[in-house]
Length: 333
Image 1 (tube, rainbow, N blue to C red):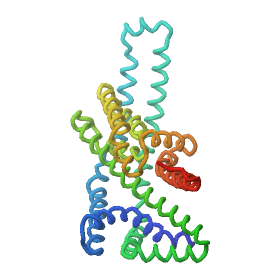
Image 2: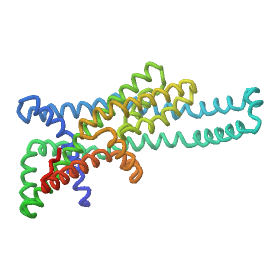
Image 3: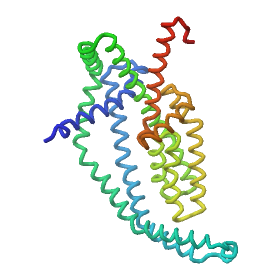
Image 4: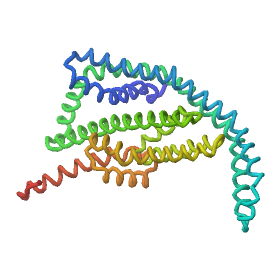
């Protein structure tokens, strides 16, 4: 057994504890209960959410994916049949043969899609099922995380003692301050972004139900998950959502595209900055700039973590500027 295998439950434990610590802090701030009671409430919410996902949401999503895999070849044939019956007025307008080129391209696209979509969906389902192999590590990690949350001050105190023992006082002060800032910022961002994505996913699901869109749950899940990437996430989720709807109704696909685009505008211009601006203390301009820079250099992961990184950099830079201004006797206001 390798060291990485031994450490997997502890990695799960620290991730779970880091995630649930934000909720625990909220409960301890607003409800004067004993810690073990607050921890019990946190884990009831945590496991209740997991149970809801695996017993209700996941089976429906898998059914949607299976049905989609079975129906796509039919929709592909229907689309090809429609394209082969080009109206005469379009043929008269298209003097340069652009429509034939487009039709040939779409025919080839649907042919490849029909060949690959079923294996791709089956592979995705198998990968989802294979995640259960980590179930034991997750359970062990969640048990260990209880003790981490219960004695979090003890662990933090020992880390501080070790830091001061190994580093000069000023350097230790700076190191502990930076670690605390990183922990607080990433925790706040995670909570804010999950809340934002949950709201967007629910709004998307309600909108799809109102428009009577098939695979509403699958589409909403894609939009909600991709929404973890601030501002641009719903646009990324919009493309597969529009394609899924296009297979059975081009008209509804147009409405889905418009709806998700408007949802993205609402999230990008109001909801996201409202939630994340409060959580990480950044103005909307800096949030958008950090996402563009992070995505440009590091792709999807850069877009996902750009905001908390920018918030940490901003805080450290503010402290450095305030310190230099104080040394020069200049007011920082």
